[in-house]
Length: 160
Image (tube, rainbow, N blue to C red; front, top):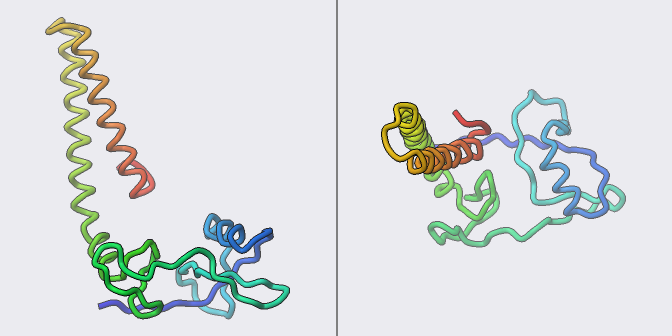
């Protein structure tokens, strides 16, 4: 079960268009302020920005009408997702629930890459095998390790 508490926050930004205001706000989460006195409690970026001169709320970007994973209709405040990237909240939850296993798998493969690099370096030092072939294998496993690091950094903010 999910229990959500959404608190209204705002951010003053200088922008020449609603899209630019949305982008600036998304890129600076440290700038959010609570509209009323509330304890600090996360935020969820709205798909609307407000024109302060007219008070008009303007939707930015198109909202998905159907979940890209299961095809169900997405209804705002009923089953829309936190990240709003085209999935209903149930599909988004299932996808993110699997992340710990994926992280462990990538970390295990990264360790295998590091072990292979070390093995080929040791072989190179001991003159065991063709030096060009060994260097090619070292370069290959380094590329694989770097891809693991990039995947971990993208998902978790750092290679871990």
